[in-house]
Length: 226
Ligand SMILES: C[S@@+](CC[C@H](N)C(=O)[O-])C[C@H]1O[C@@H](n2cnc3c(N)ncnc32)[C@H](O)[C@@H]1O
Image (cartoon, rainbow, N blue to C red; front, side, top):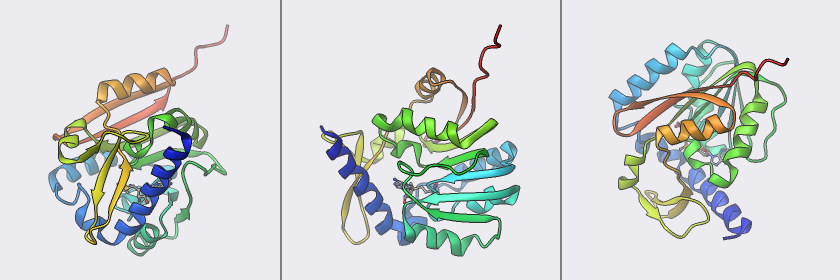
């Protein structure tokens, strides 16, 4: 599989979420699981996302208002104008700045205290995993923290998993009947921790029910110089 195939899959993922925006809040996996949402919200509250906060792939803003609550400023990025329009209508807060950008192209203009992403890491193809985490590191100041929400491998049984794609992927259908492929990487928590440790991140992961996990990550302290 070539890089061109991967680019086409990522473009399809962007197109999928643009078309899904209007139905996203009714069909997102959290919409049907209020108990898990409450646990994840409590965990995010306890994490206390203060200071300058960056939200990657904010979508319709399901977490944006909560992130904004204690922030000095919140920058929320998504590639879909349709998603951002819904998020902007939902979160009317002068501290929040929405930016339409492709995360694989975007570069930060400043450093943040917190980087947050929900239902995004599983959409990053393995070929871009390391570069993506370099971006996260570039976005954070020295003591910066990361909060991640995503789905567990058990979810694969409820997806139409594709076997011949340039990255792990699933096929999704919309109310219109349109079908799209999206990248979907299911991480087993222990393996994700190890993978991130190898890149210099200290991570703790907590499972929430059978479907979700949240993770908190910080860069490891570099060894003291002699
Ligand atoms: C599963 S949704 C998650 C939305 C939100 N974080 C949540 O938890 O509800 C994934 C989001 O990633 C966005 N997205 C897809 N590809 C992107 C890219 N290359 N750059 C920025 N955003 C992208 C989509 O538009 C969509 O809003």
